[in-house]
Length: 300
Image 1 (cartoon, rainbow, N blue to C red):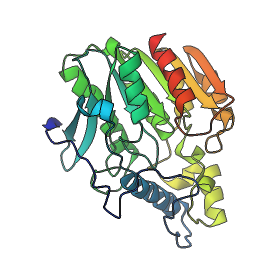
Image 2: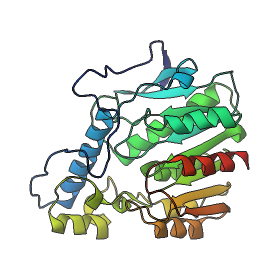
Image 3: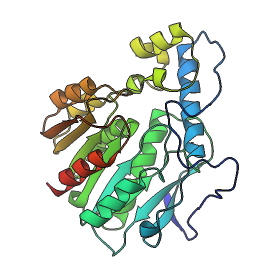
């Protein structure tokens, strides 16, 4: 894998009809109908394809306070590349790797990046997943997602960053990816899971404006073995049972996408749980209350 610095940061043309700055994932986006299917694996593939399409529509301009401190970097793989943002205003040597959720891209969590830069001594690396954001559309696999996130750790280690100076934060699906990244890199300092998915099947398909036959939804949710090898092993709780580093869990009581009992189950699975915060405010989104708790966890 090679890492390239991209000199010109990508800023979308907001006059382009395909650009949408703020999309409500639940109700304001029409991503079309899925044709009736007899294969739950095909339904899941289509669901993920729709969320990747959403992520490509959701690019935002870099915030003014971050613009001068932000570089876009590219991780080169054998047959593809994936982009990331590095935000480091004063050459810091401690980093937070931030992993976003389904339907998002690396520009959507900028309030978190900004808060990290302003309130901690960490810099930020936010890797994009292949098929998401400005990356070339492609089918994803668990393997490709994990390669995309591991690339960020490899990049930091190559820069000479001590693993003990790296924290991992994951939101929604990014929580699963963060747990897997922590499992593969036991020498990083801490893991913070925010509104974390326990599995891809716990990402509630009911809350996305797409049409999937009811029997397919049922099979996707309750019989993951029928989804095929691609998604079968996605399980955050099982990862947490093996992770020794400090773990912080943040969730909202009113999260309608990933229920708060998922957070409670994840907490029970942790070997080294430091705190679990179930907020009475907010929903699934990464709002200011969650960001404040992330900052507290980074500073702990």
